[in-house]
Length: 365
Image (cartoon, rainbow, N blue to C red; front, side):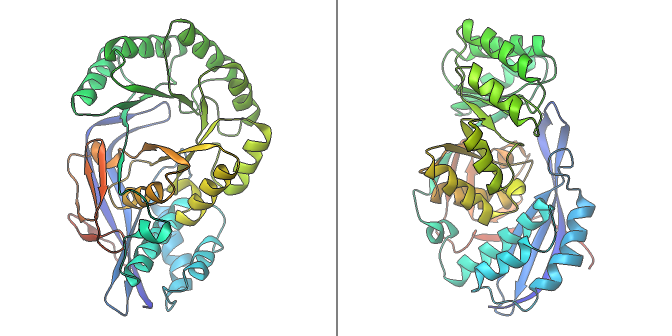
């Protein structure tokens, strides 16, 4: 099975409600889709969103990186030579992690199709059913409480609460949600780099003293502020999770050595794809550190790949934040992974199992 062509398309899916964080507001999934064609007639699918505030990637940079730099290196390559192809992708250029991830996902899809098995089985196996939390966007208190109660009614047992815009109001938001859900759901707090280290400690001490129980606090400080992250981790009882502070496996070693966080959030768009996501999970496992697997605002193409990784590495990836497809008005993808509110199930189809993508707008080469 040889790569003969790489084509790109745009996929747009409106969200049920705007996705709001301390960093941005998103109303529509707008992702670049990668289709890798082969001489055997098989197609591999990948995907990447534009997340300039986080990864630095835009639609234009993703398209340029793939068309001009990655594609020429991959044409003619044998899919069976997976590690070689992954090496070509990762060494093509610095950074551009989302573009690399989109292509890697499509390559892994084809690799599993080559051997006629679902991807997770080739990555190590596991139980093909997992559950995800759902994001509660930062908003007015009444709206966040209503969204939380609605999520619980839909069967979600873990809520990821977005804060980070106003420290005083953030504390009141969390208190109100905690009181409203009455212990019916686990609460995860995501500050999205919106606080200083001292603000984070103040907020968490206030919440903990008020009896608010949180499963974790995610990325309270700026991504580069590892000292600040360590400061918070040392001074609060709630486990602290690093997200934007960790992109690459080498950063995991630094974080662990400095004891700057308790949990690591793995996202394929940060790691540059599946290969580095697996490396990060393996490093964390060696040191007894738990991981979460998350996503950007993505459809069920790339999120499906994250699901396969989560299942295969479930010994260390103990928390799942893959609600991207649940936030959309509809699922444009036929086949593969089934996203049914909080429950996610992988089919027995080879690779990612994708049969068709509705509404895909192909881009001219």
